[in-house]
Image (cartoon, rainbow, N blue to C red; front, side, top):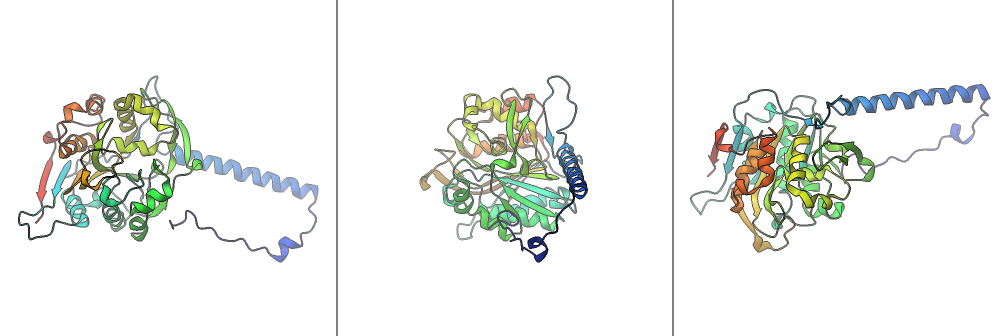
Length: 351
């Protein structure tokens, strides 16, 4: 079971609770006043928590709401592409953990992104009631490796969560992500109605919408999608993964899917994006279901530019970046670049 999520402690009923003395009117008024003070203080604290990243900011007319978790430093690299398929077929491919380690090392290490005491939210794709072999959800070994790397870098607390499309309990369990994240020390949070807060995003399509609070109230956010085909957007990974930050009837957004994806990527600017391409769903996405639709690629893409990560990632399923309308929109908004080759990029082959 996830830590601190579903566990509750029974409350012991003491003798003092059983044999209470009568309370005077004056004492009752004092207690009510104290309770009101606590409520006011709690509300103020909650507002401080939310305003931390700009929810309470004064926006100019037409200005979009942004949750920007990006770093301000230049860093060593903007993007790393790690492939773990050896030239010698007698040698086993690199493991997901090895791919993550190599990608993070190339990017300057997880300490470049995570500081001591950080609360980190990790957003895998846990949308579907599928096994890892179906390549519909993020590989659980990738998730576990990233959780461990965050703690090794000094994170105080790591949360792993997503707002699933299918029944969440089955998605979290059958994907293998619940066990992998929990065993690595993360708090695994299942989506529930009380975890959403309605927010006006001021996007072209996304105006007022329920937002999943665990993914926007951390100090750092790591986007951890899986690369795969999508029957509407043609390809899904980094930018489309932010659909999991929304509640409500998300299927309504499919009528203008490119703009909604661009709106979401405008709102969510992650600290780091790591794209799982260990096993890639080549067709019949995003849910899949046929093992023959997935292909082993043993690849991980790490980037501080989610647009660039998608511009390269789409080539893994034979798609072209210029065919993805949301990439062009994101570039025009200044979120990132489609020309991933122009970034400080390193390609690494393991084995």
